[in-house]
Length: 281
Length: 166
Image 1: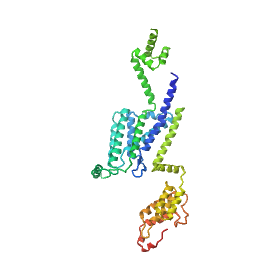
Image 2 (image 1 turned 45 degrees about the vertical axis):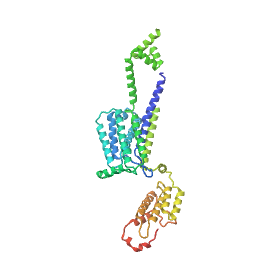
Image 3 (image 1 turned 60 degrees about the vertical axis):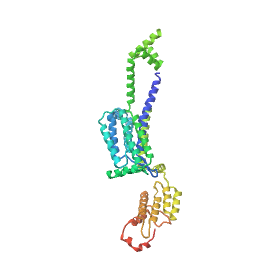
Image 4 (image 1 turned 45 degrees about the horizontal axis):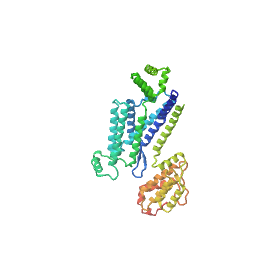
């Protein structure tokens, strides 16, 4: 049993390194790429929309929110304790996260007119308000998923159906009613339905990337240690017989090792005594 | 050791992918085919489709200017060949030229193509040796197109109808 531990740890370390140094930058760069892609309604030509200034501001607020919410401990991602290559790699990962955030906003913000202004203001207000709220990382992720989901629905479902070619009487009525109020255009450039699919994929990838992003590079190790400590605490509270059952379920090796007199915590010693007693009976 | 390798590979991969994303946004290809064309331009392996160019020239000589431009567009989709752009500009000039008045819209597009031809021939002034053409340099063609777009008192000269198309 003890011989399998280093291999398991190696695999885990390698997988975590792959996640941090390869997978996360790839996910975020793909979001940065797809977030600005639109497909023209006419000939299906690609249009690449670079991140506008407002989305960069929103991305800064978003990263600040991650830092405040504990979803991102920048001081541990970029630390003097890390090696140069590690810091460079982490800086690149955080850079890709920034541009992915900007392009995720770019993907769900309407192209022009009043809807763009309203949604941009809504995003700014929400992100600014959240700076002063108490968030745990999971709640923050859920809140962001809801925020992007709402914006996606407004842009790619509501507005797209309102301004699609061959519009119905409702969209004509809405446009006519609001055109005078906005003193500008309500509709943006016409895009094909596939733009919505690309945006959906980009957002799903972005939220998935955020879910995979550890608050700190070594956060998983901390979590493992916390879980182990919790397990030891829970075991020590169990009666001796139940504790023995746990050991038996976990594997005979552990009981045998303890019976052979290896170093064991006091709680385990009781289990060993019980095993020996049962053996005599 | 393995982790260090992953870090280095991760850095290289991230930089490469980021460069690709930036390049896509700068080149702004309009289709998947265009991505391949732009990539060949970036790699320096881009070449004009000679057969399509010749087909376009045949159409040009038969005064099928729009069709000729279509062929040249397909021959040089990235608009990176100075000679092809010169011919495109020439096609706009000939189609837009009128004995009484010129088509300004076509002349403007011709001017854009002539500018492209000049920009692309940075090493030496572009000169096209073609016996069927009366203008052989891009600078001369540009001047002719600019002259056609100008509004002068000479536009009202009735003798203008006797001028010759180049």
